[in-house]
Image (cartoon, rainbow, N blue to C red; front, side):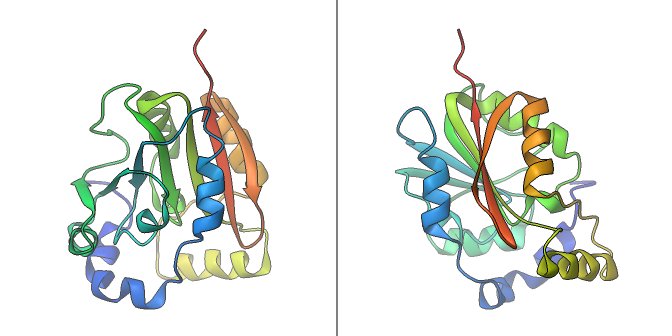
Length: 193
């Protein structure tokens, strides 16, 4: 898969990833999913890697989608349903999922506009797109941005305010769920009329 961001790095570090990353913030993620207009039955965790965030989600059907085969092996070993795929061309039918999450990964995704448009396409009306990201305007965030530049990641970070404006332009109704170094935005797909 060409041009899929920093996938080679994640293939290499897959065995160590869960040892160095903190667990996902279950309460915040589930609060974001609760902003959907209907119960979340089916959720897709894009860039879900080893499944550490997917496990925290409160939904009966959870799917991890990632481009990194190494990370997906970790998720499969946890008993999660996995699909190897590119977020810019999601292998799901229109309006077929209740929620989509991206945890600590949106900044690694090339063509974020295309990714957001694909998420909008597969979400049911009233469904929610929950993104947890790192705020580059915080002291820790500035350090993370600098570190990712040093290792030559192609990262593209946004503050909560910038991310909500971006999601509005795609057609979502976003709201900020949590702020700080790691923040969460929940973006609802408008109900069709």
